[in-house]
Amino acid sequence: MASRLVPKAAAEEGGSGCMESHAVLLSPVGKLEILGCEMGLHEIKLPQPGTLPSSRAEPWAACELRGGAEELPEPLRQCAAWLCAYFCEPGRTASLPMPPFHHPLLRRDSFTRQVLWTLLRDVKFGEAVSYKQLADLAGNSRAARAVGGAMRSNPIPIMIPCHRVIRSSGQAGNYGGGHVLKEWLLSHEKLQKEKLAPCCSSANQPRHKTTATWLVTSSQSTRHNSEQKKKR
Image (tube, rainbow, N blue to C red; front, side, top):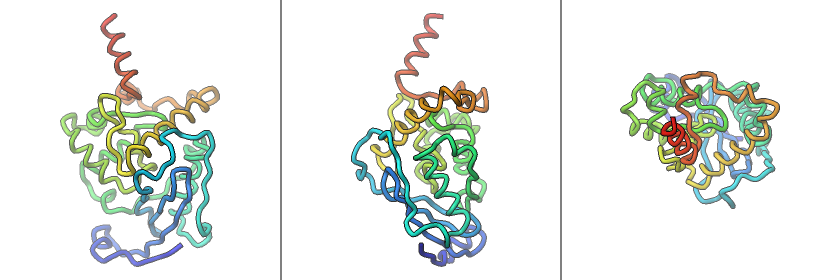
């Protein structure tokens, strides 16, 4: 674990200076870099695109925090614990505390911030939503392109699940960590949700009925819904 002083410009933009700590989590998708301070999480850095051995989620998962967690600020320990649960025991993530976020983008009022918070709040594990649908949920149905920009700007991927935002066609679309990683995460969530479904079906239902009507999982499900409407 290493610490450094956040550059002055970034500190001013975030509202105060802070000592940034750095940790590396060895995960099934490679090395995840976690950055933050005592006030909150700054960033999660994904592995370089193309480093995954397969586009399929494996039935096993393992995580290891390099160097241990003893000297890390609490937000980084919370982040590492949440990520380990995400990969190894997804059913536990709902009961774990999420760290506070301390990135300037998530602290100032903007449409990007609104989109990211909407995504975090409304699109649950194992679900997916199109760019246009997320724009609708965030309050501006004409801002699908801006939603794409918000996904590219997301400083805390996986935890703020921009991998769950797909194209209207059902294709995965672009991702900062690369197409293979996005497919892996979506496949991982689909498989794990299926395993959890028999005993936790109620916990996997969207909290908001209005959100549920917008969610899609693939082009196949979209076509199926269209066919059903025609029959009616």
